[in-house]
Length: 89
Figure 1 (tube, one colour):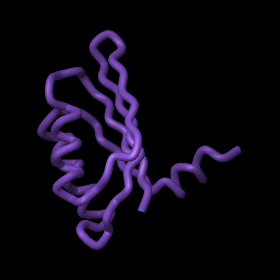
Figure 2 (cartoon, helix red, strand yellow):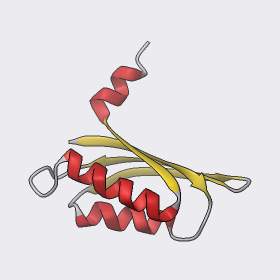
Figure 3 (cartoon, helix red, strand yellow):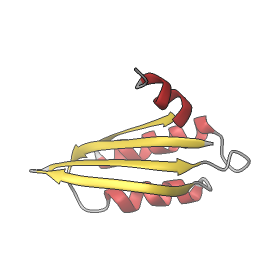
Figure 4 (cartoon, one colour):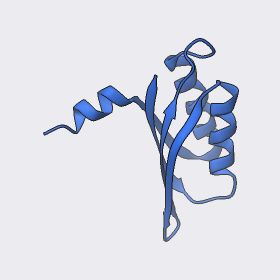
């Protein structure tokens, strides 16, 4: 299952690593990643493929929520089809 993950918050060391580790523990693959820092605001968008046999969407979402709380950032995961539908004009 393809998913879009967005991360936003105050920049600090280890954000990319923590998100990548959480995804790896769930068997997810990072297909593409873009990140930027504007002043002190960290922003990252990832396109990922979830291995739903290892961890379903809700499990990955819960794990990322915990990582976000630990880091003090907002992490949102959306199914790619839902994401595409939301932004289709």
